[in-house]
Structure formats: structure tokens, C-alpha cells
Amino acid sequence: MAREKSVAAVGDVTDVNTWSGIPFHFWRAAQAADFAVRAWRLDLSKISWQRYVWNALGVARGGRGGFQYSDWFLNLAERQIPAELFATEVITFNQHFPRAEAVVRAGGRQNYYIDAPFLGLVTGRGLDLHLPKKVADRAVAAERQNFAAADRIITMARWAAEVVVAECGVPAERVFTILPGANLELPADWDYPVRPGRPGIDREFVLGFVGKDWRRKGLPLITAVRDELSRRGLKVTVHAAGRVPEDFEGRPGVVFAGFIDKRTDAARFTEFLSGCDVGCLFSDHEALGISTLEFLRAGVPVAGFAHEGVADTIPPDCGFRFELGTAVAEIADRLEAHMRDDGAVAAFRAAARGWSPRVTWERCVGEFAELWSSGKVASPVRAWLPLSGLSK
Image 1 (cartoon, helix red, strand yellow):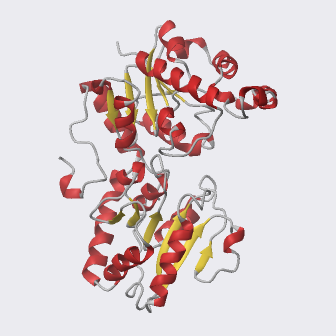
Image 2: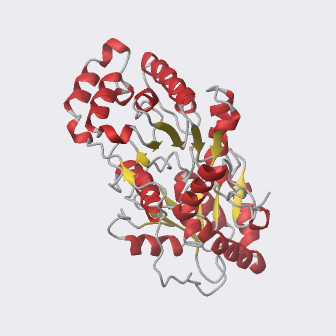
Image 3: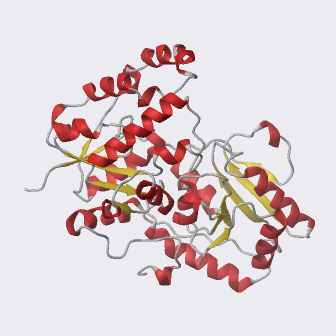
């Protein structure tokens, strides 16, 4: 009899607000596929005053932060969870919770699905995570222990898998990469809209941007590219989802759509994405890049630095892949050439629509189920290849 599977995260998996909704969307697709039905429901509001005490005492440790990696937090968190869940086959989205030792001791099995190893984050890859050295060193050691006791470590991007093997010491045969899905559900009657006219020439060519961390994700660069294309006589506008940062108040050529709550206003978010000609993510550091997957799900081509996780979310047949640090003028050159080539515009749009059904959580869970049943994924979706190269 197969062991029951459960999904864990730091927070309530059944709450779409937990970790950008990623565990929620995975769990719901896993439920529908009868792959993993049980969800861990950690109530972080019950572990609040302890965090304030931890931070208040942080000076003695050399700085604030890192409470969720402490034994104090982990003990409190694990006590909230029904004992029977520890005896399941756990798929967790966090490399520190639950502790693998607690799962194995209860007769369960531990599996990880992560966007980045903690070791990568504290060394400035995927994201710059700044913590007191003592806290970071202890958390790195705990991650190694957890990985050593796990059945599988599944990463969302290739760079993370490389770090897990080369630097965390996990044998390659226990490490896998499965592209996640986009946190976007299209209506049943969805039809990819086509705006008339040649983008950039007859009408505005819209560069789309989604992200709270607008500086790290490259909004200043995107607007600089827009300005350069405008100087060349092309019609280009940046559409950004989110509130207007102070630096951009009154800036010409940039339209802010305001905050869009994907949970309660999914139709507006989908409309925003599909109204763009290219979805952009020019991050210096990014563990993955869910926003590029969301644009692809809406059938919109993408662009960004093919670096770290973003490199795995920009298909070459409908994406502009740039090396990290590429100059504004060079980015503008490629986009201008694209706009002036009607065939290229049509081909990118068609390829993006072809990717749409491949960047879903249903497809992701299907690959998980195949991995569990056969020990491998025969033809995983790899967005760094064109559609014709999926079997490579």
C-alpha cells in the first residue's frame, strides 16, 4: 500500500497567501490528481511574540533576523502539526521545516521542493539573504542534515540543483529539477487576445512588469530600454503591476496598474498580463521567476537576464534571453529588430501560446507523480529549450 503524501510549508498550505501561493497551487493540483491530499496548516500568528524576543536579543548574536531557522521556532511549529502527518511522505517547500529528523523518527519520509538552497541564498545566489553569521552558519548546517536524511531534493531550477549536489553534498541520483507552474488560472472560455496593428509602429509596444521588489527585478532597466526605443522613433510603453514607487511618480512612458490581488481579481490580473507584448524580468538575482511563467501562461513572450532561475523560464522560441549586465542599447537593438519584423512578432506570439498549457501546476504535479512511480521523469518540460526540443 502506498504511503499517504502530504504538503508542508512555513505557513498554512491551504492559504493562498502562504509563500506567494506556491504551496497552495501545488497542493490543489495534487489533490485533483489524487497525488497528495493532506496539507500542513501551520498558524504563524501563534508564534509571534517569540519572534520579537528573538530580534530584541539579536544584538548578542551579531544582528537581527533568522528566527524561523532556530530550534525555538521549529519546536513551536512542529508541535502545532498533528502527529500522523509526520508519518506521511512529506513534500515540503522549506528546507528547514519540518526537520527531516522529526519526520523520519515518526516513520515518515522527507522530500523537498525548493526554489533555492539556503546555502545559495546566504552566498548571494538566487537572492541576497543577509543574516548574522552565527545564524546563517547554523542554518546551513541544519540544511545539510535535512538533505542528508531526505529521499529526494527537487529544485525548481537547474542552478539550484547544481548547488545542492556540488556544495550541499547530496548525491546526484537524489536530486531532480521540475519546473513549477504559473500561479494563474485561465477561464474555461479563454481565448488569447490579439491586438490589431504592428506593435511599436502602429500602436504602443507594451513592456510588462510584475513584482514588488521593483529595483532588484529590473524596472529601472526596463524603463531605460523603453526610453532608448522611444528615442529611435518607436512607440513603447511600460505597464507595471503594483503601486507607484517614489522614483517613478510622474515618469513619462510608464503606466502603473496599481496593486492587483490575484486571489480576488484574477480576471483583472489576466487582462493585465495579456495586454502586454513582452513580460520582463531583468533580475540580478532570482531563484526562479514566477512572473515570467505567468506571462507565458497568458500566452505572452518574455524577456530577461538568462541568469540563475530566470534562465529556466525564458524559452528561446518566444523569449529574449540576455546575458547578465547586457547594456541598454543592446537590449533595445534586439527589441527594435523584433518589432520591425512582422514574421518574428507572429512567431513569438504563437510559440508563447504553445507554452501556455505547459507551465501549469497540473503538468508539474504530473511530473511529480511520474517521478514517484518510475524514479525519473522521461520528458520533463524544460523552458530553456524551444518547443521542438522538449524531449532532449
